[in-house]
Length: 119
Image (tube, rainbow, N blue to C red):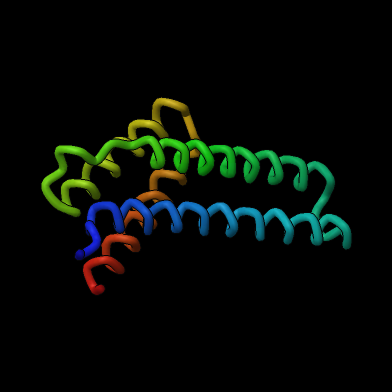
């Protein structure tokens, strides 16, 4: 039986969101190293750390939303992509998540979609 492309898309997007979180965690690791060797001040470190932790919380929230999202009624992968983009944008704005999350989510959605269309 051929796998459902709509479900594959959601799974790819979930993986991309996890990848985004790992990227942010790597950045945190780098700023921790920069603080140790005093390339950045404690103030800058704490401000950056706060922003990056907020971004991780935002990604966690979007991952949970993605797990709970309902794609019933979507005709095809394009419908799923558009529905999830609209819903995730709405969630980002409603929860006042960092604004860069809009661009990051769009990039992850586009990447998952392009990968699936090539498969």
